[in-house]
Amino acid sequence: MHNEKDRIYIFDTTLRDGEQSPGASMNTEEKIIIAKQLENLGVDIIEAGFPIASEGDFHAVKRIAREIKKCQVAALARANKTDIDRAWQAIKLAAQPRIHTFISSSDIHLKYQLHKTRSQVLKEAVAAVKQAHAYTENVEFSAMDATRTEKRFLVDMVSAVIDVGAKTVNIPDTVGYAIPEEYGNLIAYLFSHVKNMGSTIISVHCHNDLGLAVANSLAAVKNGARQVECTINGIGERAGNTAMEEIVMALDTRKALFGLHTKIKTEQIIKSSRLLTQVTGIPVQPNKAIVGANAFAHESGIHQDGLIKEKSTYEIMTPQSVGISDTHIVLGKHSGRNAISQHYKKMGYILTEDQLNKIAAKVKDLADKKKDIYDEDLEAILYEEVYRGKDKYTLVYLNVVSGNVAIPTATMEMQVDKEIVRDAGFGNGPVDATFAAIRNITKTNYSLLKYAVNAITGGSDAMGEVNVQLKYDGYSVIGRGAHPDVIVASAKAYINALNRLEFLKENTKKVKVE
Ligand code: KIV
Ligand code: ZN
Image (cartoon, rainbow, N blue to C red; front, side):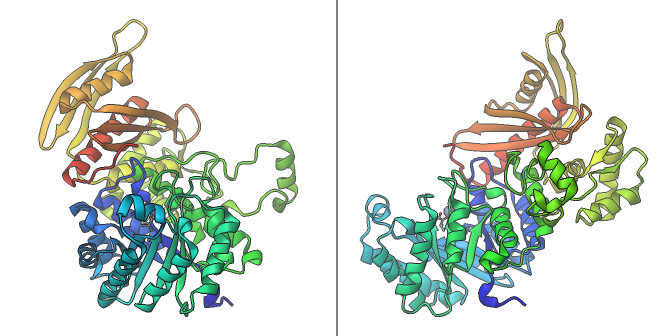
C-alpha cells in the first residue's frame, strides 16, 4: 500500500520552460494536444504557460485550463500585481488552478539584474504570494537561482512565503550549477531550518547545464522534496530541464532504494515523447535514456546471449513498461479501415469517423509505396493529417527534375491563404531547387539554420523525416515534414517552418536565437 507522504508529485513544464527551448514554440492547438497527452500520462500538474508573455500564451493557457480536468493547471507569474492578475484571468476556470509566482533570491541576480535589495525582494515575494492566495489556496512560490542564494536568506524567504500561504515552495537550480550531494544537502538544510514547514511541499526544478538535472532531482527527493518539475524529453531553456521519463523511471526501477512512487502511467511515456517530437520537430538523440531509439537495443553478442537466457541479465526495465510494443510491423497494403482504426486504438488514439477517413486514404497511399507500416509511420500520418492546425501555406503540387545532366529544377503549386500560386526554382540539387521555388512563391527569404533528414523506420522504402530550422529577425522555428519521398518531406518541413514563423509573428512572441 502506498503512503501519501511517499508520493512524488510530477509537475510538468513542457509547455512553459520546455517551450523556451530554441525552436520549440507551439501554437495553441499543438499545446492542447500535448496537454491532453500529459493528462493521459497522469502528471499531477501541467504548467500551461506564462500568460503575461503574449496574447498567444494567455489564450493557450486559458484553453488548457478549460479543457483539462484531471490535472492541476498552473500559470506562471513574476512577483508583481499585473502578472498575477493576468495569470489568474487565464486559469480561473480550471478544475484545479494553481498560481506559480517567482522572484530571484541570489545576490548575483539582485545586484546585476533586479537592482534590488534582499529586503525588497522579500517584501515583493510576500506581497505576491498574498495576492495570489486571495485568488486561490493553490499557490506555488519559486526562489529563482535558489542554489546560488545565501542559505540563511533562502530560509528567511521560504519561511516568509509559507507564512502568507504558499503551499508549494520551489528551490530551482536555475542555471544548472548544483552538484547532487550539495543540492540534497540544501534541501535537508531547509527542512531543518525552516520552522514553519508544516505540510508545505518542497519542489525541485533543475536545469541540465552540467548534465546533472535528473541526478540533482533524485538527491533532492532523497532529502524530502516531494514535487519534481520536469519536461518530456528533457527539453527546456539551454541544456534543458529534468527529463520526465528519466526521473519517473529511476524512481520506478529503483523503488526499493527510494521507497517513493508517482502516479505516472509509464506505458504512456513513449507516446508522449514521440508526440512532442512530432509537434515541435525537435528530435530525440538515439542514445537518450528511456526514449532514444537505442535505449532498449542490445548490440553486443554477449548481451544478446544473456538476454536470451534470462532478460534480467542485461535489462533493468522492460520496453513494454514505457510503452514500446512487442511487434513493430503493424499494417500493410491489405489492411482495411477497421484494422487501421483498431491499430490506432491499440496505440492509444481513438479516431473519429472523419479523422479515420482522412487517415485511411493516406495509410493506403503509403502502403502502395512501402511494404511494412510501423507505429512511427502511423503517428507521422496522424500528426500531418489530423493534428496540424490551419496553415497560411500548403503544398499542392511539386515536380522536381534532377540528375547529373539536368539543372535541378522544381515546379511547384502552393495555396497561400485562399489563393493558388505557381512558380519554379533552380538550385544546386533537388532540395535547394525546391526551397528556391517555395521562396519565390511565398516571397520570403529567411536564413536556413539547419536541414536534417532521417528515416523514420529502417529500409530504403522508409518514410523520410525532415527537420528544417529557419531564422528571421530574432525568431527561430523548427519545421517538420514526413513523406516516403524525401524531397516532398523537405518541402513540407520548409512550409511547416514558414507556417510556424507566421504564427509566431502574429502572436508577437520572440524566441531569441542564442
Ligand atoms: O529555472 C527557473 O528558475 C524557472 C523558474 C521560473 C521556476 O524556470
Ligand atoms: Zn527553469
